[in-house]
Amino acid sequence: MTKNEFYTLFLQVLEQASCEVEDRLNAKISRNFDIHLYGVGYSDYSLDVEKVVDIIYIDSQRFYRVIDVSITGIRDDLTQVFVRVSDHEPSSFDRTWNTPPGYGPFKQLIAKEIKRLN
Image 1 (cartoon, rainbow, N blue to C red):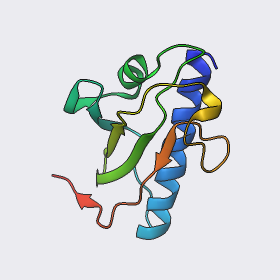
Image 2 (image 1 turned 90 degrees about the horizontal axis):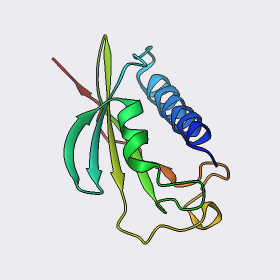
Image 3 (image 1 turned 135 degrees about the vertical axis):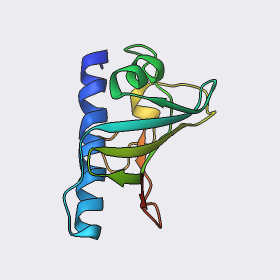
Image 4 (image 1 turned 60 degrees about the horizontal axis):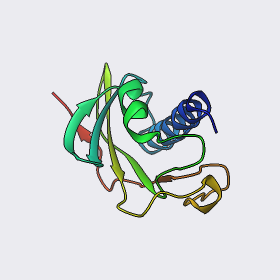
């Protein structure tokens, strides 16, 4: 999987998470993502999607095995996303979480509460 394909997959996971939150809230949310990254040397760093992909994409043969993704907060112009990379040893794509099939390392978590951000 190329970095561009990984980027596209991450966007698909973010879109799926956004749709789930929209269904729960019965309202549209922003696709302007503020990613709070944990793991791989980061602890609550606020980053954009491109920068996160630069950090969490290793190469075409090795991937982090589990990358948790959860929408945790919203405001009209922004959606806050929790992303945590597991400490598992990187592996081939076929040894990642991959549930549902095709998600690779991305594991969608459902936040109990979505905060309304100021």
